[in-house]
Image (cartoon, rainbow, N blue to C red; front, side, top):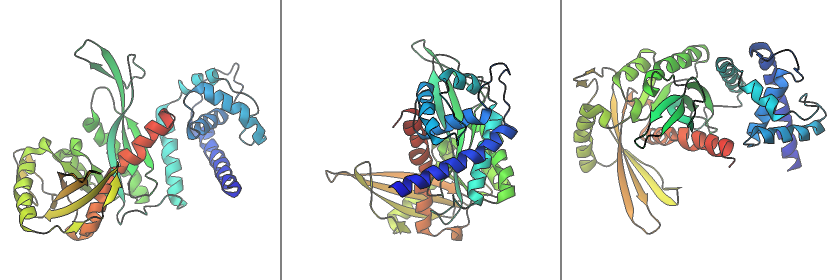
Length: 359
């Protein structure tokens, strides 16, 4: 245990030292010169350490800095830093600069092979939206007003996140706030453009997975035009596609054995199994809103959930994709579908519960 703790400490000190260079060179310090006791990198590293220690409030971060003095000043924290000091800095930071620093750190860990696409046979990136803050006051210029039936008014701060689900760590690799004048689908194109620009430099992206809220032909067109693959859940937002998919695949399910069957796994106290059927009959399918020229396959995944009582429940999910049929074998297709939910279970849940709620 002592050796493990020593390795963690060494890694953390090295990380803080590395990112401190970016803080000083690329992040604007908007504080007034008068009374500026602590350096920018010292304060931001203190907040970073507090997040990793699951501290909920800035008051707890203040108490933590008192304890860090014992590290001998290796983090340049040589005394207690007040929570007010942290607050004044955080309210003056420019999110664009912080985002760029975050992305640069992710790229660095990929280059050093600390993070790898090691859990799937294809580089897989899940994109999804998340409400990160909700309250009665407008907390940011990005906050969106919501009027409730009971007369209440709340403000929601929403973001788009990209999570590398083909890595065993499920790292969040990018995040962007959703502007108040649009929604997640409207903000997708700008967010995707940033990811594509990075992809051209490092070649790390191949398949993007999205839930049914993003299943629009314009989004599929954009991903395909950039030379990437998409896998989208199909629901009532695309009635024509869904109707035809049901017609073909339900008949296929009735008359043919599944192409792949997963092992039973434990989830939420239940045993879960997934089965796959695929069709290429809908390739280039035309709809009233236009042709899905890039569409190559439609998948049906039947999930069987067995309760502790022995009772079984089944659900059917449909997916559209422009992947070539031989790019993934049937077992790998099921693995990719299962991995998409890592964006929620292994990223959103961790950030909400571990960082925001304190575990």
